[in-house]
Image (cartoon, rainbow, N blue to C red):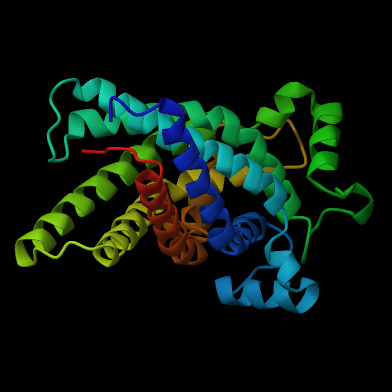
Length: 303
């Protein structure tokens, strides 16, 4: 991998990000609506992710599920390019001349956490716009006169009313979520990939592309589920921070989660778990399969 031009790592990551949004955005819209409405004291309460999905389709059609997708495609693609590229390059740097095929936690965890911390600065503005677009659709308490016509309108109005710092609202929570989440994701991904390949290689010498795709689906899907299982409470807090109409609302994620816990218990801190987990497997499986395919097509040597 040392002879591979660095830009190829970032191109592969960008393609993975496009796949993630294409597959996962509708699930994300449902998650955000559940987090916004079901944690508020007033307004509609969705019975489940299916109930929320049905209402969106009935009132807005399929377009409603892709509300906010424009900023998501830009943000997630760029973010994915950075996180995969930084992870690969940092991992290579930390490994040095020790190119062990077995997963090394002391290499994987800091590489992934570092990548997550860096991308949080890109992801925060993108997700703020996405979340604000998503919550103004079906059953929104946002007055029609105050709604955004599109992502650019949302960004401009946010900067006008809250200043440049307003676009980075929830930045600390995003940094925590991405650092912890990516450390969990890449750890699970690397270990599942390693052990599945070990078992499949010992059982059969016919190591074809179909097996690689299957391993990519399982390792990526399980990694995504682990990511969100670990950091969903932080994501709930981030959604509330970024969509609160009052800019003086607390931005301390732990204070917000404590308030939710006192009112709704542990379940409230995991609001949106259903659609999040449903999204996590296919979206991250698509990302990993796309990433690994791009790595092969670009001639990147991972071993």
